[in-house]
Image (cartoon, rainbow, N blue to C red):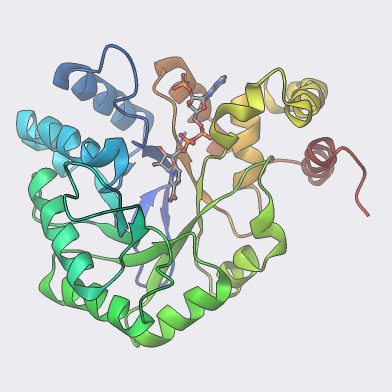
Length: 305
Ligand SMILES: NC(=O)c1ccc[n+]([C@@H]2O[C@H](COP(=O)([O-])OP(=O)(O)OC[C@H]3O[C@@H](n4cnc5c(N)ncnc54)[C@H](OP(=O)(O)O)[C@@H]3O)[C@@H](O)[C@H]2O)c1
Protein backbone atom coordinates (compact mmCIF):
# COMPACT_ATOMS: atom_id res chain seq x y z
CA UNK A 1 0.00 0.00 0.00
CA UNK A 2 1.50 3.39 -0.91
CA UNK A 3 2.15 5.65 2.07
CA UNK A 4 2.25 9.45 2.32
CA UNK A 5 5.80 10.82 2.63
CA UNK A 6 7.21 14.31 3.07
CA UNK A 7 10.05 15.04 0.66
CA UNK A 8 12.15 17.27 2.93
CA UNK A 9 11.82 20.09 5.45
CA UNK A 10 9.09 22.42 4.11
CA UNK A 11 8.58 19.96 1.25
CA UNK A 12 5.35 18.53 -0.11
CA UNK A 13 3.68 15.37 1.18
CA UNK A 14 2.97 12.92 -1.65
CA UNK A 15 2.29 9.19 -1.91
CA UNK A 16 5.56 7.23 -2.01
CA UNK A 17 4.39 5.66 -5.27
CA UNK A 18 3.39 8.18 -7.88
CA UNK A 19 1.49 7.60 -11.10
CA UNK A 20 3.47 8.69 -14.17
CA UNK A 21 1.65 9.86 -17.28
CA UNK A 22 4.39 9.84 -19.92
CA UNK A 23 2.72 6.89 -21.67
CA UNK A 24 -0.85 7.82 -20.67
CA UNK A 25 -2.15 8.20 -24.23
CA UNK A 26 0.06 5.58 -25.91
CA UNK A 27 -2.49 2.76 -25.99
CA UNK A 28 -4.44 2.05 -29.15
CA UNK A 29 -7.27 2.95 -29.00
CA UNK A 30 -6.46 6.08 -27.05
CA UNK A 31 -8.16 6.04 -23.62
CA UNK A 32 -11.34 8.10 -23.33
CA UNK A 33 -12.01 10.59 -20.56
CA UNK A 34 -14.22 7.93 -18.92
CA UNK A 35 -11.34 5.41 -19.06
CA UNK A 36 -9.04 7.90 -17.40
CA UNK A 37 -11.58 8.81 -14.72
CA UNK A 38 -11.84 5.09 -13.92
CA UNK A 39 -8.05 4.74 -13.78
CA UNK A 40 -7.65 7.82 -11.56
CA UNK A 41 -10.32 6.50 -9.18
CA UNK A 42 -8.44 3.20 -8.95
CA UNK A 43 -5.22 5.07 -8.14
CA UNK A 44 -6.97 6.82 -5.24
CA UNK A 45 -8.40 3.52 -3.98
CA UNK A 46 -4.87 2.11 -3.97
CA UNK A 47 -3.51 5.13 -2.08
CA UNK A 48 -1.65 6.64 -5.05
CA UNK A 49 -2.51 10.32 -4.69
CA UNK A 50 0.18 11.95 -6.81
CA UNK A 51 0.34 12.33 -10.59
CA UNK A 52 3.56 13.00 -12.48
CA UNK A 53 3.30 14.70 -15.84
CA UNK A 54 5.22 17.15 -18.03
CA UNK A 55 4.52 19.80 -20.60
CA UNK A 56 6.16 17.67 -23.31
CA UNK A 57 4.41 14.34 -22.59
CA UNK A 58 2.48 13.02 -25.56
CA UNK A 59 4.18 15.80 -27.55
CA UNK A 60 2.36 18.45 -25.51
CA UNK A 61 -0.98 16.59 -25.32
CA UNK A 62 -1.01 14.71 -21.99
CA UNK A 63 -1.53 17.72 -19.71
CA UNK A 64 -4.68 18.60 -21.69
CA UNK A 65 -5.96 15.01 -21.34
CA UNK A 66 -5.48 15.16 -17.56
CA UNK A 67 -7.23 18.54 -17.59
CA UNK A 68 -10.21 16.97 -19.36
CA UNK A 69 -10.49 14.47 -16.50
CA UNK A 70 -10.53 17.29 -13.95
CA UNK A 71 -13.03 19.22 -16.04
CA UNK A 72 -15.34 16.19 -16.15
CA UNK A 73 -14.78 15.44 -12.45
CA UNK A 74 -13.67 18.61 -10.62
CA UNK A 75 -13.83 16.71 -7.29
CA UNK A 76 -10.83 14.63 -8.37
CA UNK A 77 -8.45 17.59 -8.64
CA UNK A 78 -8.18 18.21 -4.91
CA UNK A 79 -7.68 14.52 -4.18
CA UNK A 80 -4.46 14.45 -6.21
CA UNK A 81 -1.17 16.31 -6.01
CA UNK A 82 0.17 17.28 -9.42
CA UNK A 83 3.81 17.28 -10.45
CA UNK A 84 4.62 18.76 -13.84
CA UNK A 85 7.81 19.72 -15.66
CA UNK A 86 8.87 22.37 -18.10
CA UNK A 87 11.80 23.34 -20.28
CA UNK A 88 12.00 20.90 -23.21
CA UNK A 89 11.07 22.47 -26.53
CA UNK A 90 10.61 20.19 -29.53
CA UNK A 91 9.30 21.24 -32.96
CA UNK A 92 5.56 20.51 -33.00
CA UNK A 93 2.21 22.28 -32.99
CA UNK A 94 2.80 22.83 -29.27
CA UNK A 95 6.08 24.68 -29.95
CA UNK A 96 5.77 26.56 -33.23
CA UNK A 97 8.99 28.54 -32.55
CA UNK A 98 11.22 25.50 -32.01
CA UNK A 99 13.43 24.81 -35.07
CA UNK A 100 15.03 21.81 -33.37
CA UNK A 101 14.80 20.05 -30.00
CA UNK A 102 16.44 22.13 -27.27
CA UNK A 103 16.21 22.94 -23.56
CA UNK A 104 14.93 26.28 -22.32
CA UNK A 105 14.97 26.93 -18.58
CA UNK A 106 14.95 30.71 -18.95
CA UNK A 107 12.82 32.73 -16.58
CA UNK A 108 10.37 33.70 -19.34
CA UNK A 109 9.94 30.15 -20.63
CA UNK A 110 9.47 28.60 -17.17
CA UNK A 111 6.79 31.15 -16.33
CA UNK A 112 5.02 30.90 -19.70
CA UNK A 113 5.05 27.06 -19.70
CA UNK A 114 3.65 26.92 -16.18
CA UNK A 115 0.88 29.38 -16.95
CA UNK A 116 -0.04 27.18 -19.92
CA UNK A 117 0.10 24.03 -17.74
CA UNK A 118 -2.29 25.63 -15.23
CA UNK A 119 -4.78 26.31 -18.01
CA UNK A 120 -4.47 22.87 -19.63
CA UNK A 121 -4.71 21.03 -16.32
CA UNK A 122 -7.74 23.06 -15.24
CA UNK A 123 -6.20 23.96 -11.94
CA UNK A 124 -5.15 27.07 -10.06
CA UNK A 125 -1.90 25.61 -8.72
CA UNK A 126 0.81 23.07 -9.51
CA UNK A 127 1.84 21.19 -6.37
CA UNK A 128 5.39 20.69 -7.62
CA UNK A 129 7.08 22.11 -10.71
CA UNK A 130 10.31 20.49 -11.90
CA UNK A 131 12.80 21.86 -14.39
CA UNK A 132 12.78 18.83 -16.69
CA UNK A 133 16.47 18.84 -17.65
CA UNK A 134 19.42 21.12 -16.93
CA UNK A 135 19.61 23.84 -19.60
CA UNK A 136 23.34 24.21 -20.34
CA UNK A 137 22.68 27.51 -22.13
CA UNK A 138 21.02 29.29 -19.19
CA UNK A 139 22.40 30.89 -16.07
CA UNK A 140 21.11 29.20 -12.93
CA UNK A 141 20.20 32.62 -11.54
CA UNK A 142 17.65 33.09 -14.35
CA UNK A 143 16.12 29.64 -13.79
CA UNK A 144 15.94 30.40 -10.07
CA UNK A 145 14.25 33.74 -10.81
CA UNK A 146 11.53 31.98 -12.83
CA UNK A 147 10.89 29.40 -10.11
CA UNK A 148 10.91 32.05 -7.39
CA UNK A 149 8.44 34.22 -9.30
CA UNK A 150 6.02 31.29 -9.65
CA UNK A 151 6.40 30.37 -5.95
CA UNK A 152 5.79 33.97 -4.90
CA UNK A 153 2.69 34.20 -7.09
CA UNK A 154 1.36 30.92 -5.61
CA UNK A 155 1.12 29.33 -9.06
CA UNK A 156 3.40 26.53 -7.89
CA UNK A 157 3.55 25.33 -4.29
CA UNK A 158 7.01 23.73 -4.54
CA UNK A 159 9.94 23.72 -6.96
CA UNK A 160 12.46 21.05 -7.87
CA UNK A 161 14.51 19.62 -10.70
CA UNK A 162 14.89 16.51 -12.79
CA UNK A 163 18.00 14.87 -14.26
CA UNK A 164 20.36 17.28 -12.47
CA UNK A 165 23.86 16.22 -11.46
CA UNK A 166 24.98 17.15 -7.93
CA UNK A 167 26.92 20.27 -9.01
CA UNK A 168 23.99 21.53 -11.06
CA UNK A 169 21.63 20.94 -8.11
CA UNK A 170 23.98 22.75 -5.73
CA UNK A 171 24.32 25.74 -8.06
CA UNK A 172 20.58 26.16 -8.59
CA UNK A 173 19.91 25.73 -4.86
CA UNK A 174 22.51 28.44 -4.16
CA UNK A 175 20.67 30.79 -6.55
CA UNK A 176 17.29 29.93 -4.98
CA UNK A 177 18.45 31.27 -1.61
CA UNK A 178 15.96 30.49 1.14
CA UNK A 179 13.53 28.66 -1.16
CA UNK A 180 14.55 25.02 -1.21
CA UNK A 181 14.50 22.63 -4.14
CA UNK A 182 12.40 19.77 -2.80
CA UNK A 183 13.55 16.90 -5.03
CA UNK A 184 15.58 15.72 -7.99
CA UNK A 185 13.65 13.32 -10.24
CA UNK A 186 16.19 10.92 -11.74
CA UNK A 187 16.40 7.65 -13.61
CA UNK A 188 17.09 4.75 -11.23
CA UNK A 189 16.61 1.04 -11.82
CA UNK A 190 18.43 -2.26 -11.75
CA UNK A 191 19.44 -1.48 -15.34
CA UNK A 192 20.41 2.15 -14.65
CA UNK A 193 22.51 2.58 -11.52
CA UNK A 194 24.44 5.77 -12.37
CA UNK A 195 22.96 7.75 -9.45
CA UNK A 196 24.50 5.21 -7.06
CA UNK A 197 27.96 6.15 -8.29
CA UNK A 198 27.79 9.78 -9.50
CA UNK A 199 26.97 11.34 -6.14
CA UNK A 200 23.33 12.15 -6.96
CA UNK A 201 21.78 9.88 -4.32
CA UNK A 202 24.50 10.69 -1.79
CA UNK A 203 23.81 14.41 -2.17
CA UNK A 204 20.06 13.97 -1.66
CA UNK A 205 20.61 11.73 1.36
CA UNK A 206 22.96 14.32 2.86
CA UNK A 207 20.33 17.05 2.34
CA UNK A 208 17.52 14.82 3.71
CA UNK A 209 15.67 15.14 0.39
CA UNK A 210 13.73 12.21 -1.05
CA UNK A 211 14.65 11.53 -4.69
CA UNK A 212 11.96 10.70 -7.25
CA UNK A 213 12.82 7.64 -9.39
CA UNK A 214 11.72 7.48 -13.03
CA UNK A 215 11.66 4.31 -15.15
CA UNK A 216 12.14 1.95 -12.16
CA UNK A 217 11.54 -0.96 -14.59
CA UNK A 218 13.96 0.54 -17.14
CA UNK A 219 11.00 1.41 -19.33
CA UNK A 220 10.03 -2.29 -19.50
CA UNK A 221 13.49 -3.47 -20.70
CA UNK A 222 13.72 -5.55 -17.52
CA UNK A 223 11.15 -7.89 -19.07
CA UNK A 224 12.72 -8.11 -22.52
CA UNK A 225 13.75 -11.78 -23.02
CA UNK A 226 16.67 -10.53 -25.17
CA UNK A 227 18.04 -8.45 -22.30
CA UNK A 228 20.65 -10.68 -20.61
CA UNK A 229 20.82 -8.66 -17.40
CA UNK A 230 17.01 -8.67 -17.20
CA UNK A 231 16.96 -12.46 -17.57
CA UNK A 232 19.55 -12.84 -14.78
CA UNK A 233 17.63 -10.43 -12.54
CA UNK A 234 14.32 -12.24 -12.96
CA UNK A 235 15.97 -15.60 -12.25
CA UNK A 236 17.43 -14.12 -9.07
CA UNK A 237 13.96 -12.79 -8.14
CA UNK A 238 12.54 -16.31 -8.47
CA UNK A 239 14.94 -17.43 -5.75
CA UNK A 240 13.86 -14.73 -3.28
CA UNK A 241 10.15 -14.35 -4.07
CA UNK A 242 9.01 -16.62 -1.19
CA UNK A 243 10.60 -14.26 1.31
CA UNK A 244 8.38 -11.41 0.01
CA UNK A 245 4.95 -13.07 0.07
CA UNK A 246 5.26 -14.10 -3.56
CA UNK A 247 5.73 -10.53 -4.81
CA UNK A 248 5.84 -10.15 -8.61
CA UNK A 249 9.02 -9.22 -10.48
CA UNK A 250 7.84 -5.66 -11.05
CA UNK A 251 7.10 -5.12 -7.34
CA UNK A 252 10.55 -6.51 -6.42
CA UNK A 253 12.22 -4.23 -8.98
CA UNK A 254 10.43 -1.20 -7.51
CA UNK A 255 11.35 -2.38 -4.01
CA UNK A 256 15.03 -2.58 -5.00
CA UNK A 257 14.88 1.12 -5.89
CA UNK A 258 12.76 2.16 -2.91
CA UNK A 259 14.96 0.35 -0.38
CA UNK A 260 18.00 2.47 -1.22
CA UNK A 261 18.79 4.46 1.96
CA UNK A 262 17.85 7.78 0.27
CA UNK A 263 14.34 6.20 0.04
CA UNK A 264 13.38 7.19 -3.52
CA UNK A 265 9.73 7.89 -4.17
CA UNK A 266 9.05 5.86 -7.31
CA UNK A 267 6.95 6.52 -10.39
CA UNK A 268 4.69 3.86 -11.89
CA UNK A 269 4.50 4.02 -15.70
CA UNK A 270 2.28 1.14 -16.76
CA UNK A 271 -1.13 1.60 -18.36
CA UNK A 272 -2.27 -1.86 -17.21
CA UNK A 273 -4.57 -2.06 -14.19
CA UNK A 274 -3.18 -5.39 -12.91
CA UNK A 275 0.37 -4.07 -13.09
CA UNK A 276 -0.57 -0.86 -11.25
CA UNK A 277 -2.02 -3.05 -8.47
CA UNK A 278 1.09 -5.24 -8.33
CA UNK A 279 3.52 -2.29 -8.32
CA UNK A 280 1.47 -0.51 -5.65
CA UNK A 281 2.55 -3.24 -3.21
CA UNK A 282 6.23 -2.36 -3.55
CA UNK A 283 6.21 0.26 -0.81
CA UNK A 284 5.52 -2.43 1.81
CA UNK A 285 8.50 -4.59 0.84
CA UNK A 286 11.41 -4.35 3.27
CA UNK A 287 14.22 -5.82 1.23
CA UNK A 288 16.90 -7.80 2.99
CA UNK A 289 20.46 -6.46 2.54
CA UNK A 290 21.74 -9.66 0.92
CA UNK A 291 18.77 -9.87 -1.46
CA UNK A 292 19.43 -6.24 -2.47
CA UNK A 293 23.04 -7.14 -3.24
CA UNK A 294 21.99 -10.36 -4.99
CA UNK A 295 19.94 -8.24 -7.40
CA UNK A 296 22.82 -5.77 -7.83
CA UNK A 297 25.11 -8.69 -8.71
CA UNK A 298 22.56 -10.26 -11.06
CA UNK A 299 22.19 -6.91 -12.84
CA UNK A 300 25.95 -6.45 -13.21
CA UNK A 301 26.69 -10.09 -14.01
CA UNK A 302 29.41 -10.30 -11.35
CA UNK A 303 29.75 -10.21 -7.55
CA UNK A 304 30.53 -6.96 -5.70
CA UNK A 305 34.15 -5.81 -6.12
N1 LIG B 1 11.97 13.16 -15.52
C1 LIG B 1 12.20 12.50 -16.62
O1 LIG B 1 13.07 12.86 -17.42
C2 LIG B 1 11.38 11.28 -16.91
C3 LIG B 1 11.74 10.44 -17.97
C4 LIG B 1 10.96 9.30 -18.21
C5 LIG B 1 9.86 9.01 -17.38
N2 LIG B 1 9.54 9.88 -16.38
C6 LIG B 1 8.36 9.61 -15.51
O2 LIG B 1 8.47 8.31 -14.96
C7 LIG B 1 7.29 7.58 -15.23
C8 LIG B 1 7.60 6.11 -15.30
O3 LIG B 1 8.54 5.86 -16.37
P1 LIG B 1 8.36 4.58 -17.26
O4 LIG B 1 7.01 4.59 -17.87
O5 LIG B 1 9.53 4.48 -18.15
O6 LIG B 1 8.38 3.45 -16.09
P2 LIG B 1 8.74 1.92 -16.12
O7 LIG B 1 7.90 1.29 -15.08
O8 LIG B 1 10.21 1.73 -16.03
O9 LIG B 1 8.31 1.41 -17.56
C9 LIG B 1 6.97 1.32 -17.94
C10 LIG B 1 6.93 0.46 -19.19
O10 LIG B 1 7.24 -0.86 -18.81
C11 LIG B 1 6.18 -1.72 -19.24
N3 LIG B 1 5.94 -2.70 -18.17
C12 LIG B 1 5.59 -2.45 -16.89
N4 LIG B 1 5.44 -3.59 -16.20
C13 LIG B 1 5.71 -4.58 -17.07
C14 LIG B 1 5.72 -5.99 -16.95
N5 LIG B 1 5.43 -6.59 -15.79
N6 LIG B 1 6.05 -6.72 -18.05
C15 LIG B 1 6.34 -6.09 -19.22
N7 LIG B 1 6.34 -4.75 -19.40
C16 LIG B 1 6.03 -4.01 -18.32
C17 LIG B 1 4.97 -0.83 -19.41
O11 LIG B 1 4.10 -1.36 -20.40
P3 LIG B 1 2.52 -1.52 -20.09
O12 LIG B 1 1.92 -0.15 -20.08
O13 LIG B 1 2.07 -2.37 -21.24
O14 LIG B 1 2.41 -2.23 -18.78
C18 LIG B 1 5.58 0.48 -19.86
O15 LIG B 1 5.76 0.48 -21.26
C19 LIG B 1 6.75 8.22 -16.53
O16 LIG B 1 5.38 8.00 -16.73
C20 LIG B 1 7.04 9.66 -16.25
O17 LIG B 1 6.03 10.21 -15.43
C21 LIG B 1 10.28 10.99 -16.11
